[in-house]
Image (tube, rainbow, N blue to C red; front, side, top):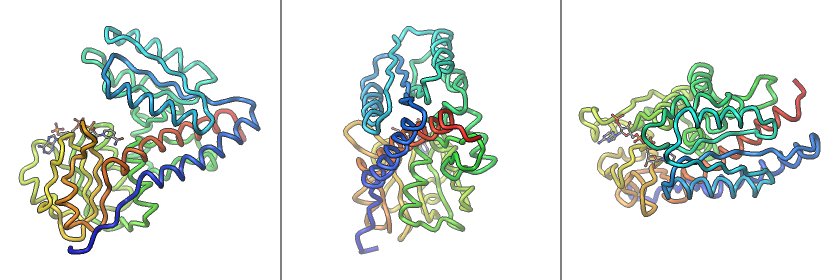
Length: 296
Ligand code: NAP
């Protein structure tokens, strides 16, 4: 490919999502008199996590919702965290609960994620939402169906939304997902499968990663290693989605080198990150609409 690839502009698309959210939040408030809250739970002092939580709180407030920030010490036990989550779960003013990943070693993060009721699991990290997405499909949760909304895991769901915005015809594509974490690679693979892609999931034990990536019509990098995906791994014309976010605003893809072959590519920053955040806020407002504006 000698042409410049199309930049998948997550920043602009995310802003459109947030604008729609603000309108939904205004309707919820007018109908119910309730200002929905997103509770963020941060455990420990990791500076990157603290920054993410701050950004999430800021976006929550920008669309007219309330940000409830819970900060627990690194010495918190699993039982103490579960008790806090149960308290937030029973607080009717809380529409969504986000537990910032990762929690300090020694805490059972899975148990904590799964203690969040599915409707308030607006980050889409619990087994119930994962199972619903994987088994039943995911069409950006909608309260119009009369069924409780399903929350997609925010990063892959945000990626699907970005691809939909750019009218990427996923059906029949060979998708290669690099990474199989419960919050990114696995739900990403499930969503791409639901979109009729043929999906290959790669991980640290994959043999011939470059050759496998080269067969991808669309490649999603979710590895956690800066500039990991090399330009010559990318098939000419492939779509490259960089879900990675490493220190210094560096993605998991060598952007310059991959741009030479890709037809479309996400920048870092300004690609997947803003879509993740917008999806979280969107799903919180959808949960709030379901909880406070019941027609069901
Ligand atoms: P993770 O839990 O550490 O998982 C990384 C995955 O990459 C694992 O499945 C691992 O394989 C695989 N991997 C590691 N080294 C590999 C190698 N040499 N070859 C092939 N696969 C390899 O990370 P994560 O939480 O999924 O995050 C991945 C990236 O996304 C990070 O850069 C993170 O910062 C970023 N992220 C961004 C957002 C956002 O909003 N933009 C949100 C979440 C995460 P094994 O399973 O075999 O160990």
